[in-house]
Image 1 (cartoon, rainbow, N blue to C red):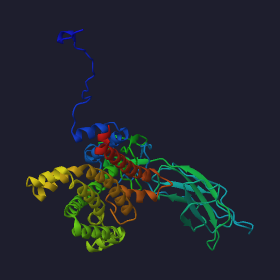
Image 2: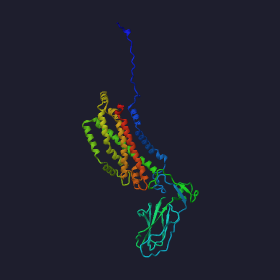
Image 3: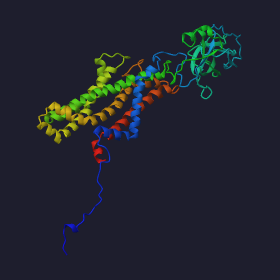
Length: 463
């Protein structure tokens, strides 16, 4: 059998051709896609952006002076009642008297009755009681807690040393609360009787027409009458122990806290980049000498240098220590960044494209600025992101112990220090600044964790 070329037919084989499944992306485009896939990092990024908007544009929208005091709403919690009743001008009270009662000479007894004379308002609470036998005087107490469980009478308001006087007018820092007043009988030597008489009193917030006009609640004092009800200024997050708006103070405090938390890390990261780049590129003895000095700086105590810088800048007790704080952070916090950058430079300088650039005549500054530092930007951004919450926490800690931002300048740390004093009675003064510190630190940490994964070139190669 003979064969020739015509006896053969071509065999058609269907083969799958490999194609690119996604478009070619740059390093930063790929990092952004992987960052968007990280839900926690994206939510944290939105939180950081929201905090920056809250800090920059918040005071423009909520134009309330952070140092202005609203004495009618001291330590008012969020959503507190803002109603105030218009009353006439204050008139002095003559009080009440009674004929002393002679007793049987036994143990002193407390007054048989205690009541409120007239209306109990934030302007005055007028108490009246019955005369006690053999009384040499009376002592009046006030408490915000019920005296029944443990017999704690509270704050001593004053003594009535005339046994014929059976009344007392309280005008000491009254708030729209329920107070528990107690009266104790005194003998001729000022010693207290064992018993006491108490009465709960609910205080109503009041204001005069002239005061309402001065506060801007009404246009004229003639438009209201006694008994009318007005609304005081709104404070969405309440007020502090001096009647200052918490929302305004949080906005202005954010400017201080975030300024320190962003500017200081940016400064010491730049120092670390320069120092680590020089050490990594030079290598040899220069590298060893520079790194040993960085190890020495790491061993220096931060609080000690903070105190020394306060002395150097002549910071007096009660003054702000923003500049010494930032200088201490920059001077002592750069070695960690320098070590990371040095490690990256040591790795990059052995790459083939660096050798090729040298053969083509590239100078040292060109190699460092054009090739080495740009290829370490991922590590630098992650380090900067983690350094910001650390700086914010450091500022909050120093302000909390009185070595940072001093009152009346608001910062989240100093506000926590002030709120700690009234934590049991008005917890919102501590909760809000502490919550802002916690949310900010958590958001930056989660964002830094997401950036670390997104900017890792090895993860891109394995996908």
